[in-house]
Image 1 (cartoon, helix red, strand yellow):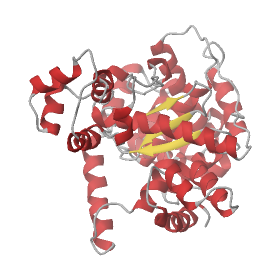
Image 2: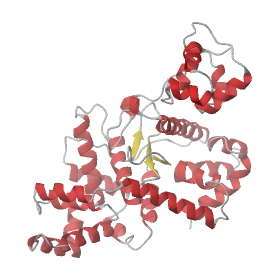
Image 3: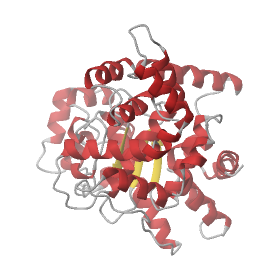
Image 4: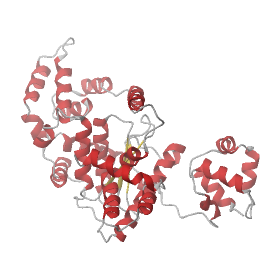
Length: 400
């Protein structure tokens, strides 16, 4: 016997309509309505329960619950660049959010079992105070100075992202990666409920954009509880924190390319292309988007608002091209790896769960504090045989 309320929750928590559920399960919409509206438990066959498990991405045991589980996904825990509401999520994003929450719970459980303190060692932010001063204090706390950052210019951008991720995770914030529609959402952050805070960024996004997203969402995590500022003001504040942390005024002004950019502004005509060139060069130096540098130039009073708005639109990233590029690269990687199947389990685990989580689980295995089978559960119910490959992939990616 299955609770009709649990059945309805399983569907709606995935943001599936009754029509979508009908197509997934191979039954009529009327039958969906019927079993979800019963006042008593519903008797369903085992084969149909297996269909429900596949369609709703839940273990079979979930449908044996006698009540709806406590919801740990409140709206005020959610942060995005585009102000996407949780109620507007599609099925894919609902799954990502659920997995992120599950990872937070599992991580806290593991830390408690290993007797490791769970705390964030970063300063609280307040939108009412000077954003540039707070951005510098946050950067100092993370421990990456601008000279170190500028040394990454000739490296793969993924190295720069890893350096930022590693430094932030060392301060107690989980950073996870998932694939979702990059045109709709770039990333989000989760905090509260006594769980470790987590930032989720979009693995489909441009690397430079994802670095900005991670810092932006970190600002959301660190904003003092009870701030009276409105959502739009907080979004602006988090953007300003990210922009000023990644490109500090004093560093930009002292950069040799900045002087050339100023000169290009002073001699600009409709045919001048040097402005765009030096914006691009500075964006490459700091490993940020051209829009971030453009915003800094505007904030420093070097260009007027109409020109800024025009250029900002011109520099806007074509997300369709990004997705197509990612798909092309993925196809090439498959072909290079003898063309077999999709992404390997080890690569997916290391990419999705992030360095801090994966390292903690693997260390626990190496120290005989948990078994390979327990580690497999922490990595999302994979087969224990993959643990060795995960350790090897992690070492190759993060410990070289």
